[in-house]
Amino acid sequence: MVKIDRIDRVVEIPEEVTASIDGNTVTITGPKGSLSREFVSPRHDILQEGGAVIVRVDLPRRKESALAGTWQAHMNNMVKGVTEGFTYTLKALYSHFPMTLAVKGNQFVVNNYFGERVPRHANILPGVEVKVQNKTEVVVSGLDKEAVGQTAANIERCTTVKKRDRRVFQDGIYLIDKA
Image 1 (tube, rainbow, N blue to C red):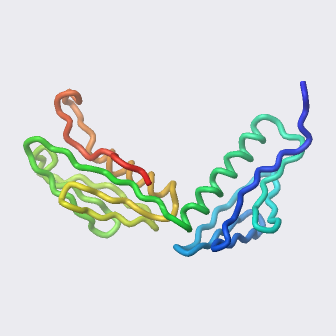
Image 2: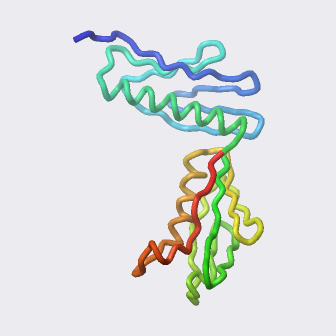
Image 3: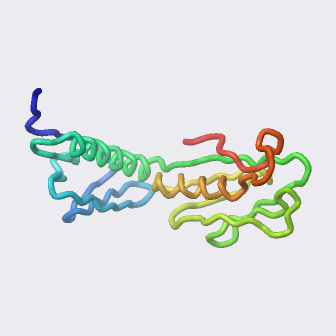
């Protein structure tokens, strides 16, 4: 079995983006804003060389190599977030009872789902913007991919069908596009 002595995972930083490393915290700033995240591991090093951030591990084992690749993916998502941002589009579908969608502070509210009198709520995470368009389309956008995805999942989950056949009762809010 061949042993690899070092793994370097390189994250390219575009010209309009700056990256700074303070201990275990990596901060990436771009035209849309700034994101920071803490990366903690005793065996991994994060270095900045020129226009790139490098995740380095010496004499890696399988899990340490996988963790280096995960950190590289997180930093690539941070770079994409501060340059382009992330947008998820959801669509509300109903057959008989027209549901109404609203954003109230950090809560997403669904009224009249299956004719229910009590509204259903979903949490909106900090740094995420939610808009309702055309009464049935929900646009979730932000810089942090994890926060945007979790908010979209919260909205989708708040309209789960319970005690009914899901093949027949297909009302709900569903993810239709990621960008």
